[in-house]
Image (cartoon, rainbow, N blue to C red; front, side, top):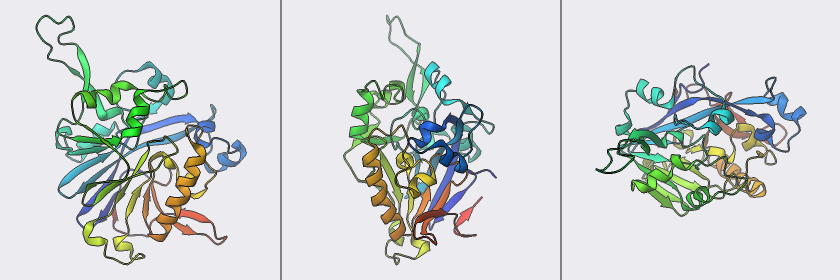
Length: 317
């Protein structure tokens, strides 16, 4: 089953799952301090101890806007990315996925970046031939420029500050060519905490993976008056790397080795677990290859589990 060929509907709001391919990462990085004997039962690794991670992106059509949430690893040549991500793209790139839906880069109005790691903002920019000025030695040389020329990009201010001032632990996850040109071209808006982007779409600060990580909540205005357990009005929650796989969202202590603030991640997940359960939210994972969407319930042991959506629940494939 293609785990990305799915669309969720909330009245006039449509959420399309897209992909920039599948990357293969060391399982120890993905599951951190969880013993291999435990996580391997959930996601068996290959002979190099790697597990697949979907490079999932989401297109939201809401309030007369096309909103792209995260944009994969991109296509800019980078030796570190080439050796670190091991990306496989049997169905092409994010740009191919958009094209299959008849959408050109200039038709994207808003790009929301959950954070600025290389596997989430690669297509924010592409190498484009610069016009140059007379007398410049590098006139005409390719430079990174915004991929979506008519879009306004949004990221948390703290995330941008950390990304532009990396340390020894974070410098192999932030690549300036992905995001600095956005600021140089004047298309990047830096946010300070929770922000309503459009009437139906807001971002919420969800720190832990990075200090400035944000997640996205889709909740159409006309549905907010619905009862808390009315599934037709339940919000949709794009988790991001607060919990890259659904099992990370189910189990508080399961935190990746990449989280810079792992204890903060646990408390962030605790808060948003309660919120997701109380609001019957539909969850969308950024990396889970087996369960891209689901809903949080209490299992027969009283613990949280993520289950698939009910058949026909406002989804199409």
